[in-house]
Length: 235
Image 1 (spheres, rainbow, N blue to C red):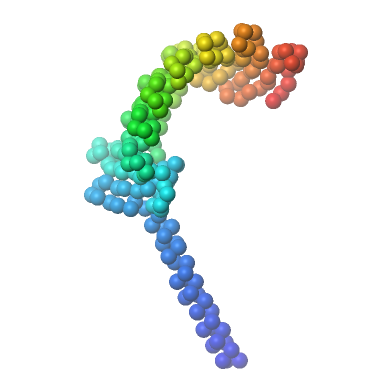
Image 2 (cartoon, rainbow, N blue to C red):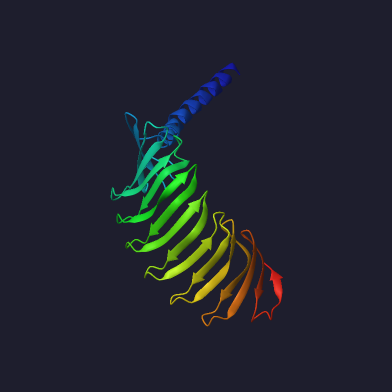
């Protein structure tokens, strides 16, 4: 009996040692994969995924370089891992690079500017602009605390206007979206930058195709004019 217990003890010890030997490198690898792969003074380097999470393993689409600017903020340079071209230049107020605070620029893979603007405490402020990959203007908008205000434009890739909103400093006003050629596709009112009230979706000939009612961003009901014979239904 005593010999059997000793054998069992030796067996369990062997299994535990083998388990630690096999799995400890896996845990260590996971831990190492979430740390910067290089530290140079105050500057850190890491491979990151599309969400900005550090994953120092092959195949990640970006590598990141970041450092404190000495004024309470952190500067980030994000690069495309395959080409080495810049993907983003940004300022943050926290070491984890979660709270955007300052200049925020993004770039297409071909090096052309994608988006440009400023943030304060993670909210868009002032003029923001965007461009298509070929360099054509995509949008120009003014923001106050993440709400689009004043006159904001978006454009089609060929330069035609895609939409326009005209609002007050609180984001209350009108919005129109256009078809190629300039005819109105969608029209309605904004409240605090969000769609509100009754909106009309139009056909190419200008007649009303659909009426949609919003309460903030929630669609309450839709009236399909021609096909539903002016009857409404909850959706």
